[in-house]
Length: 240
Ligand code: SF4
Image (cartoon, rainbow, N blue to C red; front, side, top):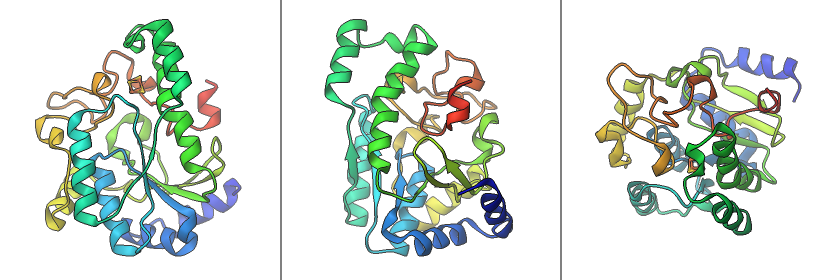
């Protein structure tokens, strides 16, 4: 989809709710639509919406092999509550074995290149497989999560994976998310109650202090502008 069409789409939906964007996505793309879940609270909201909108819920997750136990617990709880199973993608075994054999289990702490290598092997490559054959994917990105997400539109083109990326929750505040979760009794990761607004791999996530932005507990040893794992970075950004 070219930029002109994207701009027109974003303009058309400029004043609608997250639910309406979500419903449009389900109507338009049907079985060619998938939801990427990190098991964070925003993705739990979207999983709930998905189960309300359609019988054939298509939600995938990337099991990096370094997730906290609390995340596995919420995976199981969500499967039970909504009676569905996730499509689960693991990293390529040979690539992980080679990386860990050569550099040890924690080399991502030692340089940005190392960290990107680990994220590429454990997340970005599996994501490519997860999105293969789909026309659109949904994410739980919110503009208020961090400075580098502040301009995110409802609809953007994922030039790396060559499909439409839809972000229904961009305008929601943290309170909007939690109000929705409580109202609908949606299961969530207990780490959120322990000061973790954003949860990824265990060794790369920590609790934040009051006043810090939501993503500051991810890769906390890096500069704020570099804090993406590659899942939400387009080709032009990857080359910077
Ligand atoms: S978040 Fe950390 S452990 Fe997980 S893939 Fe990225 S660098 Fe590796």
